[in-house]
Length: 287
Image (cartoon, rainbow, N blue to C red; front, side):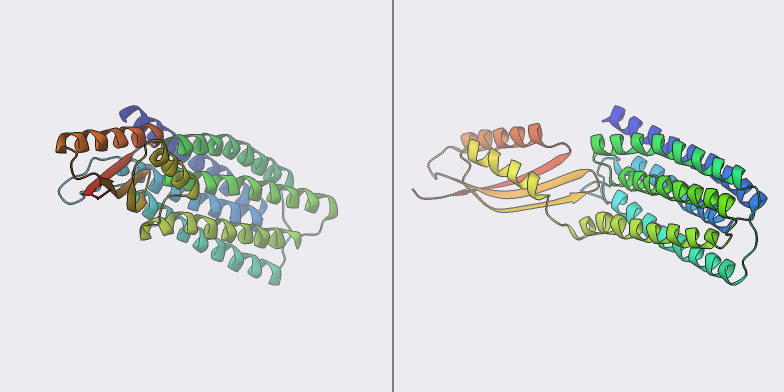
């Protein structure tokens, strides 16, 4: 677990550093060019930076062991982090649309289009590398916070490429009204990203069951071990899983054998699923 936690914090820290670097580049390019689409990307990256900082602290807290106040651990902090990040994206999108509409009313020429395009392409390249690292680690550690951060940066890749394409078109066509139009398109993509992220992060806070694929794997374990069971309940909290269920045992089976059978079931479930806490209630039944 310590190695896994170190891996999570390392990639979260990388995301913080990369976003800080890209914000600086975009702000400079935005000031030099006066492009609202570049400024919108700087705002987007600022939200990405804030999200990366939230994710960094969330992954550090989420793997803390359970304590007197948090008997089931701290896993849900990652879901809370994802919800906050999703709301931040909504704020960023609203601000971009507001600034773009102002620019459409008062269209001004955009300068230094070549520099702006280069900065956007650099941003897309950096975020492609970092988002892949985040996704890989999120999948390996089942981290909702890192997955949310990766989704931020993946969207930033597409929006940066879109802004770069818009700037190149302006350079060719001299149609400066393309700048706020591209900015609004960026905002629409950001809103879509926010909806996906909120849905992914929020519903586990309501203790939704495991995915259908995971439930099928659990069913296969019960069938293979001939476990007579009922009242199965599952839920998630960040990268942790919880399950409780009842098993039915013959009334004449000694307590020690019932205990050993429960231990075998737990071992098999732990072999299939990571970070799972299991509660089994044994009940007698008549043949």
